[in-house]
Length: 323
Image (cartoon, one colour):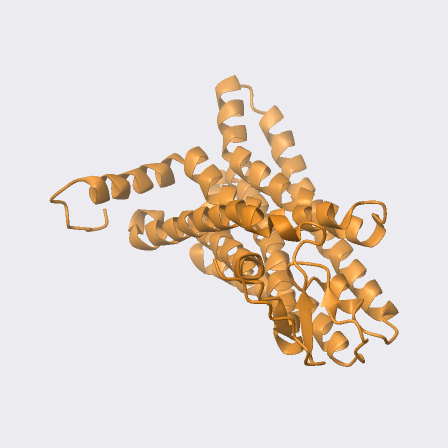
């Protein structure tokens, strides 16, 4: 494979170094990156296709799954293609505008994903604690409004980050030791006072994560209280099983996000390549596993995916009429 050394000389261009210290292993590192990204795209696009095709899945829970799939695709696509260009072709240059745009989309998608997880927790709370009013409280129109509210929150929270940085003067060193334009990594490339940028980024991370986790904890606290009031053990198990997938997805999303954010600011003793690899896993592992978890744990979705898989694999079957 040809390698093109395109280190930019333009002062308005940044250089993404990839993973410092592991440059010779970039080709090998690209194998799991591209594999995870491909699986992520296939899984999330399958969820979107099946839910969009099957009228029986036009329900609030599956609307939320589609929102989660869209945020997963947005998160991974904002990072992985550029990382693969660095690994495969040594295309490390990125314009300042492109860098700030990538920063906006990847952080906005992360905030939007958190909003979707909070809405999912609320959905499970209503389904278990007030099932008779579920259809009244959570209909498709209301879920769409909650999704739009989450999107507006993400844009309003994240838009000041690139706007604040765009007003800062450049330093002589334009090399960003990362595979993507993370907010703090980019802020260090500017020579002006970035105290406001640092504080704003930290406050937004804490507000989003802490506030959303508090709302999720409240929902599950009420769910647990309701479940313990049920005398039937079978009902206990059924109620908790409906939450298992969401809990797994939530742990996979928040744990690496918190770790990456905190280590970037306070983990000075961690080797740079370890931090960068772990930070990239946040954009690779959850988007890949989320559709798999919901596909395994949600019988209705699993059955529909199985039906389409069988039709595609069966010779002579060309009709795709939704049930």
